[in-house]
Image (cartoon, rainbow, N blue to C red; front, side, top):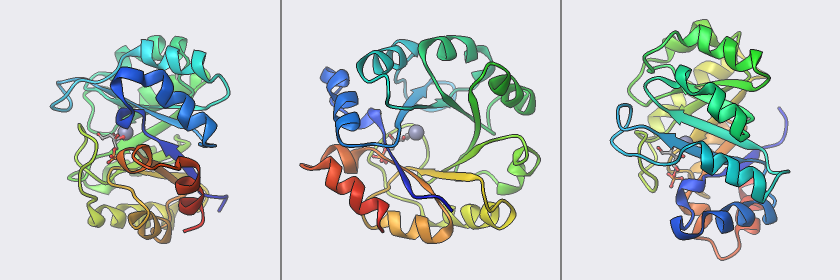
Length: 214
Ligand code: DX5
Ligand code: ZN
C-alpha cells in the first residue's frame, strides 16, 4: 500500500480565520484538506457551504480538496461543490438518494467518488459500491461535531473492506490522534483525517510526520 496520507479537517480551524487554517494545513505539508459540509437533516449541526471550498481553492490552489458531504440529499449539490473546487466528493451510504447513480455522476463530472459510512451502519451496505468508488470513508465518531472520542469498533469495517479491496483508499474520520492513528493503520487505513488533534498542535508539520510514520 502507498504511503499514509494525512488530511487536516478544516472544521477544527479557528472559524474567525478559516483562510489561515487552510494556509496552515498547506504550509505544514498536508496531503489534502478535509472540508466538512453538514446539513441539519443529516446531522444535528450546520457547517460550511460551497463558498468555503472556493475560499480554500483561492487560498491554496495546490492543496487537494477532499469534500465530505454529510447531507441527506448530496445528489442536489454536486454541481455547486464541483464548481467551487471540490476534487473528491464523499457521500454517505445513509443519504436519501440513489447512491450508485450519485457516485457515477460524481465521476462523470470529473471528480473522485467516495462513499462514507456511519458507526451504526452495517458494512455490508457498502458491498455493491466498492467497485465504483475510489475511496471509502469509515466514520470513527458519529458525524456532526469535532473533538469526539474515537470508536475503535469501527475498525472492524476497515478490516472487512481491506480484505476485499487491497488497493482501495480507506480513510477514517473522527477522534484520530497520535495514538489512535496507529490502530487505524494496523487495520488497513491509508488516509487519516484529523481535526482537533492537528489544529491544537504547536507544530502541525511534525505531528503529521509522526502520524505518517506510525
Ligand atoms: C465529524 C467530521 C470530522 C471532524 C473530525 O463529523 O466529519 O471531519 O472534523 O474532527 P476530530 O478529528 O476532532 O474528531
Ligand atoms: Zn469529515
